[in-house]
Image (cartoon, rainbow, N blue to C red):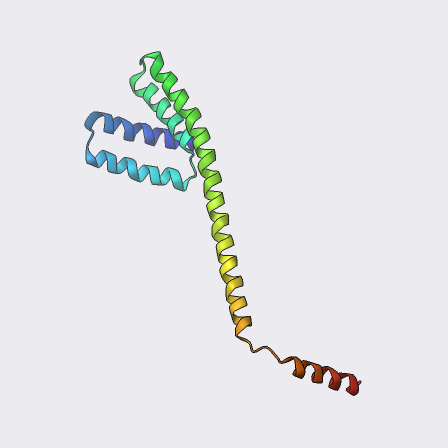
Length: 131
């Protein structure tokens, strides 16, 4: 699976590097959707990109490869923070739904007429006599 993704990415990147056309960008955008659907993390995408660049170009200055390593580390932290944020937003939405439900129940209960105190007392005495 990983090898297939790496090969596809390398081919898409290679075609883009040769032509830089809108069509190549469109293919890349569609491929990114596939990566998302397969839960490929941002740092994994960068790692695949680095490997593809090494295969396509071979010799690049050392600082270029170091920059990819730096970017991978940045994306690891970014991915974790993004995941935490999405989790918090999901929890916030769940709480909002629960609060809306509770507010609707409360509103329904408040619409119910409240019995008069005298009626409650007389019902209580009737209940006591019936025993």
